[in-house]
Image (cartoon, rainbow, N blue to C red; front, side):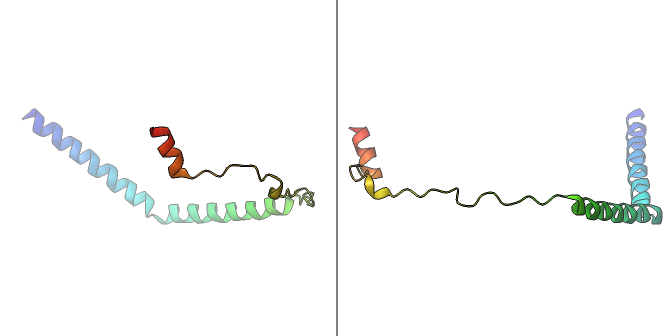
Length: 88
């Protein structure tokens, strides 16, 4: 008997929680607050984007190209040959 009453109280509590949560979530007050919050965030982003400094580009001519033709003594390895050599 007590177990059924306890389960009934838990089920009622869960349903009440879900009911009040959905009631608040779909209320006009919550929709107005969330809309105002989104507008406020958009205004803040616009203000911050205007204040961001633009940095000059200082990366011109920093890459030095090296020719790979000078290193002809390099041995070319084949992947499968390396595996075969290690297994022996």
